[in-house]
Image (cartoon, rainbow over all chains, first blue to last red; front, side, top):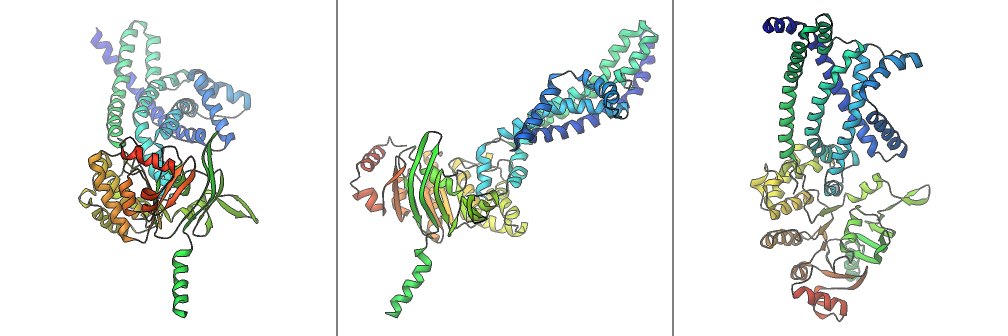
Length: 222
Length: 274
C-alpha cells in the first residue's frame, strides 16, 4: 500500500525540482552579490552610504521573509503601481534581499578580521587602496567567509519553499496540491518532500565542508 | 683651492641634502602625547639606530615616515617633498592618498611581526608589488625576486607558504620583499623582537649584509645594543617623546653622561630591558 503511494508521489514532486533549483541558484547568486555590496557599503568612508546600508540591513533582518515575499508580490505592485514582474522575480528578490542582508555582516566581519598588519605591509609596498583590497585583504577575507556562505546556501535552499505560497510550482507546491486531493497520503507526501530537500542539500553540505577545509589552509597567519 | 671646492660641491650633492627630514614633529594618541617635537635628519645611505625605553615613540617615528601614522603637527620632508602636506591652490593641505603614494615609493619597511601575505607563496610575496605597483613584467619580477631570496638564503623555499617557515625565515622573506622594491630608505621596526633567541642571529646577519651595500639609508628601531653599535653611523636615544641624546655609537653608548640614558643602558645590560 505504502509502496504504491510513494511511486505515485515521487513523479509529482519531481516536477517541482527544476523550479526549486532555479529559485535556489538565482537567489544564491543575487544574495552573494548583495552581501558584498552591502558589506562594503557598511565599511564605506561615506556616512550616508554607511547609514543607508545599515538601514537596509536592519529592515530586512528585522522582518520576516514571508512577509517580505508578500510585499514584493502583492503589496508593492498595488501601492506603487510597479510590476515586480513574475512570481520568480518577486521570490528571488525577497530571498536575495533577506539573505543578502544577513550575509553582508559576514562580508563586513571577515574584511575587518584580516590582521591590520596585512594592510600596513601592503601600504609599505606602496599599493593603492584598491590593490590592497583586491590583492591582500579580499583573498584572505573570502577564505573566512566561505564556511558561513556554505551554511547560508543550505538555508537559502530551505527558504525557497516559501515561493510555493505565491503560486510557484516548486517541490512543496506540488506536494501540497497532491495532499489537497488525497489527505490520506499526507504523511507519505511530506516525508518524501523532506527527503527531496535533504538530497538537494547534500551537495551543498559537501561544498560547505570543502569550504571549511580551504579556509583552514588559507589563512594560518604568522 | 679649486680642488677643495670641487670636492665640496660633490659632497654637497651627495651628503648635504638629507633624504629624510623631521621638522618639529609632534604626535598624540588621544590625550597621550607620544612625540613632543622631534627634529631629525637622515642622510642618504646613513644608518641610524633609534633606541629608547618602550613607549618612547621610536616606532611611531618610523611609522609616520611609512605613512601608517599621521603626525599631529610638524613636517616630514622626503627628498625635498613634504610627505603629509600638499599644495592645493597655493595652500598647504592634508595630503591625499595619491600624494602619499608618490612619495612613499622611496621608502620600505620591515615589521616586527613580519606581516607576510599568508595566501601567497614566498616568491609571490616578493613579486606581487613589483608586478602591480611597479608594473614590471612577471618574468623580470620573478628573476629579481629569486636573486633576492637567494641573497637572504631562502632560494630553495620560493614555492613554500609563510606558514611553513620559521620566524627567522619569515623575517628574511619580509626583508627580501621590501628590498626588491629598491627603496632609498629602509625602516626596520624591532625586527628581531618577535623571534626566538636562536633565530635572531640569522636575521641580523642579513641586515649586516644589506648595510654593507651602503647606498640605502636605514633607520633601525632596535633593542640589540651591540648590533646598533656595530652597524649604525649614528645612534639616537629617545626618551619621553624627545631626542635626549644623539651621536656616534661610541658617543652615545659609551661616553654619554646623560643619566636617563645611563640607567636605560644599565637596565638593558642587566637583561631586564625590553
